Length: 178
Ligand SMILES: CC(C)(COP(=O)(O)OP(=O)(O)OC[C@H]1O[C@@H](n2cnc3c(N)ncnc32)[C@H](O)[C@@H]1OP(=O)(O)O)[C@@H](O)C(=O)NCCC(=O)NCCS
Image 1 (cartoon, protein in one colour):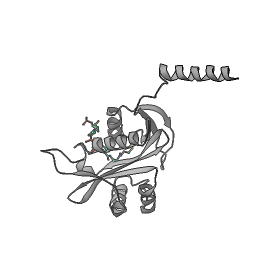
Image 2 (image 1 turned 90 degrees about the vertical axis):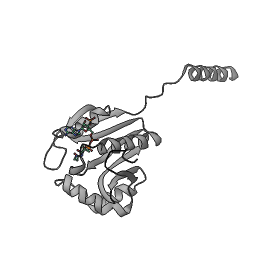
Image 3 (image 1 turned 135 degrees about the horizontal axis):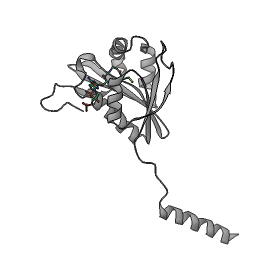
Image 4 (image 1 turned 90 degrees about the horizontal axis):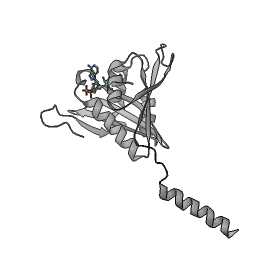
């Protein structure tokens, strides 16, 4: 994704190992209490159940986000935008990308945790349909509480009337065969 006409120029790209150091630098800046190490970031972006993107401007990483998808459930692993780029739609673009990827990998719901005092991130999530499930007390290093939020990506498929009928027919046929 590229920013539209009239906006400052930035692009979303899949995260590669070449971007690990830049991601770690943003981590240190934005999450000083519990930043992921280089090794953790490398393990994340190369893990088959994960998908990460970076937002770049002038070759610099100005944001990143990642999602884990296992079976039909996705988890937002992280989302972050450099402070001087906040409020310009990067957060929305990154989260949209995570949702698109999660859906394409078969997820039907998506979960995340966010500090209870992080109103800005919660505002973004609520815009995307996330609602609060529960609070996990003392979840973060330093003792901050986490809000667990969930959004539905795709409605769960109920069996159609045709499916039910063919299933019933199958049962009848089997019974008849005995
Ligand atoms: C949360 C974060 C990713 C949002 O990124 P962003 O690029 O600023 O977000 P956007 O510009 O796309 O704005 C998206 C929504 O965020 C919320 N938002 C943006 N600026 C806000 C502000 N100053 N105050 C409150 N909410 C705000 C709004 O809901 C906004 O939607 P709207 O523009 O339709 O009103 C970014 O602030 C960030 O990286 N914060 C530090 C790291 C962090 O807390 N990550 C989340 C960990 S769970």
